[in-house]
Length: 305
Ligand SMILES: [Zn+2]
Image (tube, rainbow, N blue to C red; front, side):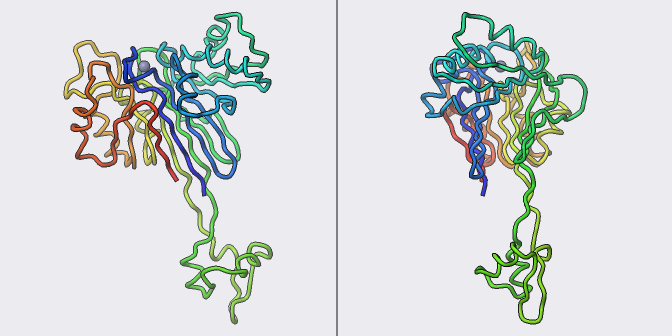
């Protein structure tokens, strides 16, 4: 059994408030082995990680959506602390305009004794590209529509083969027991007069998909990426029916609702909340009729099994 755990470390838009810190999302994937990923790294992320009880030494890969301060100003601090903690293994930072990683990390006389490697993420065109892969999941990226080059990320778990117990029982296999061990070892067993192969009772379990929008208007590329997602962490800067007069290319609640319903998203967490909304209860009231949509708060944890 595998599990994603997303910890939302900061939920404000632009400027912090007393309740909401700058954007950063820690996602752990655990299938027996645990992998820690960090998406965006706003100011104060290192302290938010500590308060949340997350070990930043376990993070090997950071994914930046765009270079606005509320998404990246925490990077030098994280790197400094990793240096103080004696980190030796490299840290990889994925980002559009990846040359900015080096600029950002050469900001101070850091004591860090490890390499920070930058990897470029394409922010042009319509293609969904694979940015990261291992044996257990891929991270896909698509350009989105913001006021500066920006991307959204999706973690897509690999499909898995597993025993289809219902089919096995219909073919005469018991509910459990050593026959399954034999089947896995030899590839086939005999049940009465019947020969059953592993292939006969194996099914493919579709991998889960977790998407983080970064900052963006709702656009075709984003719709493509969120289609069928199990969990979406979504920019919802505005909750008003109308866009504000001066629009900074973010999403609003009615648009998000429309997108997640049309694209079959199973669960949505609204984040990057404008500081003009100080009363979370009023915002929760606006989404009370949508059980699959929740309002993010700093340190909120969302699990997906
Ligand atoms: Zn932002």
